Image (cartoon, rainbow, N blue to C red):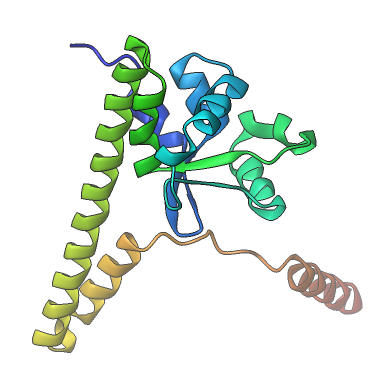
Length: 181
């Protein structure tokens, strides 16, 4: 069976907020092919199905962070209300509130994506733990190899060049050349 929505698209719509992997109501509504207002109304009518830990409303700062991360949420910048974020449990519960066939199919795909991301995260942690154990076992000969592997496993921001220093250095070299001539 062909996927209704590619898992890559779903993965791009999962964010880490308050230490939880969540999906924003706008993205979920888009995936389920309903209005955001309709999705949120269905949730409000079924509040008992969404206890704490299933969903929460973003703060102003969190909304700003999410907008920065995801370009297609820029319209939220001027919205009067703050969006809701649904945890994995909340997304699973949405299938009982939105009862269309599409909602059920999309929900299955979202759940599979959450499981896939959790599995990847777990495997990465296991690999890191194994590397630490090996580091302890072997002596300095392999330290360079372990350092390189750790750099590959740890995402780093690209180094920032200090432009001010660079410009001052160039100016000093230029003036030194001028004095010699």
